[in-house]
Amino acid sequence: MSKYTTGEMAKLCNVSVRTIQFYDTKGLLHPSDLTEGGRRLYTDDDLSKLRLICTLKVIGLSLDLIKGILESESPGKVLSILLEEQVKQIGDEIIERQKQLEAIEAIKESIRDKTAIPVNSIIDIEHMMEKNKKVRKKFRKLVIQACIFSIPQYSLLAWWIFGGPWLPFVLCFIIAIPFWVLLAKNHFKDAAFICAECNSVFKPAFIKILFTSGTPKARWLTCTSCGHAGYCVETIAD
Image (cartoon, rainbow, N blue to C red):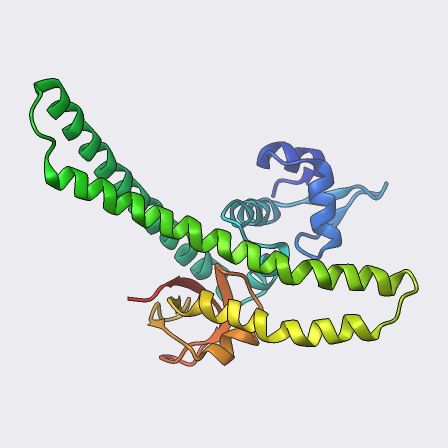
């Protein structure tokens, strides 16, 4: 079995040596062996694990979530579903862009021929522009609302740390809880989850989503179809 130093692992996975050392301290990737001088040595299995960690990082998972997935019963299944969802998302974006290109080409052709611009092309472009505008508007609104409530909290926290009273921060935190719950409910209202064990799509109660660990890409839930408890991949509900 091949043995790799930290530098060799870093080169093979296109990451820095410091990154691999950091993964060790986080409990994500421990060396399988040490030299007499105390240098880390890794095996082929460790190399595969590092590549898996890098893949999960690329698709936007946090290190804590990655650690949870790696420690789960079926990390390969969770990763497979995550990648499938990413492919679907990219595919939808490609289809949307292709429609935009076709509409633009139709308008360009009409302009060259000095004919009336097809109504369908105008409607398609307006629909796509309006859709994108709504998504951007919703995202901006979410960010602004989060900032409005976060700034007072962090300000009062800093005041408390540097010797101010603790009561204003606690009261602000309590008042903000319903707001954060509302933001979460708004995010998860169109969400469903894919079980890594049976591949069924289910929609758990909001209260169960709220009190589980994870990110917008995957959360630790119990499948309502097979009863398996583990990381389930978030998708859009039909």
